[in-house]
Length: 544
Image (tube, rainbow, N blue to C red; front, side):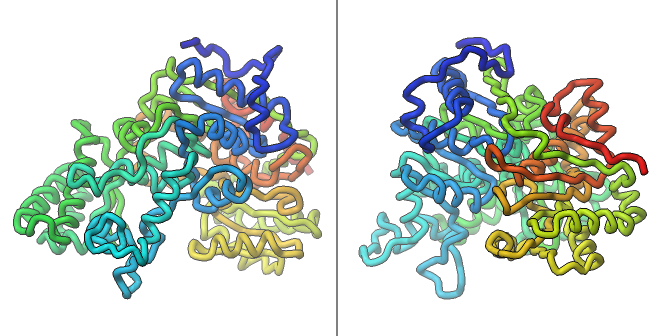
């Protein structure tokens, strides 16, 4: 295996001729061919973990398709953050052997007439008469979930979401019955689109959720336990108590019955979670909502192997914003000498994609109420500068979105809820009017090329909400403040790229939150991890 000592060096590098034959575009840029060839060389040299950092709009998805086609005999998984992104792959590369696979929860159960879905554990496989392996199967109908899963596994490239892939790999129940085995057998190549998210995605998908109804059925006093957690934070003790209750409950069930299977699956999840937490009881973060309590791993490295790395021989992580590669690798339990890093030079004209920063407003939670009203005047000015163009206002929170919509009272503004996000996004794209989308969640995974987005306003910096896991996570680093800043910057770079999707595209970005100036200055005096193209695109509001 060669030692990778450079982030990137294309000087004098000649791409492989055969790469063109697999590339999805008739006239690929030479830099795209060079990048794909370098990744191919890294794979052939024996690297298992490859990091590709390239600006949004460079064509990373085309590189993913090229590599999946080259390695089609060994088959590939492409993982995306949303179903919408997965569908975009199918639409853009329809001539390739791609199949999208969705989880059971998206398919109505044919055996039920009450709105139930195939996620019900007791009918996952052989208990369902619509499964081809069932003794009751008559061939007339086949379970829609099973049908699309089998189509996907027969294709050379499966496209699915992190959510389904990670939880299925980690919490499959093959030890109970072979028919309950993991939906995703090992493939040669796993491509992680928007790969900077993987640590958070693992934490979210391996989290252990126990409903209040389940606790009540187990005879556990919920109010008492929650009250004790406020003082002790002994989450491991509560989990051990829940596990003991489930073990006793399982002994009372008839083996093989639907209730036995459901109880077994719940117990199995607790066993797997505690097994991977290990002896470090401080590795558990806790949250609760209206219906359940949730337990998260603070550090996911113990969970990464079984939820992700067991599923492939080679892993390509693609993003426009990795920044700190060594920390990223460490989070996943990867040794530094096992990774190949490729940071592609910026290809876009920075003069067409400037970032204007306003110096007046510190939009952190302490100052937001003070600056919210005066910042509306700036937003009005920006909208007036772009009267005939579409744009986005990135708000980070739903509360900020609703505040702007209500107080600006501008007919151009449209907002969405969690339920109608896709519907409103499509409405925005298809409108012939210069609409402005106000959203807390369009900072990544959304392509708005050309006239779909000519300007965007970043209302406040996209810092993580201070959940217990985020607080505990920051404490695992020497400088938790730096970690918190860089996680924000990862999102910020993603946001910057929403309206720049191809060479020659242009979009002006406005940042109202002046905290970015101090963060950039600190980075320039220290690690210099922020891409130079982003810093060079900045212009600061002149003093009036």
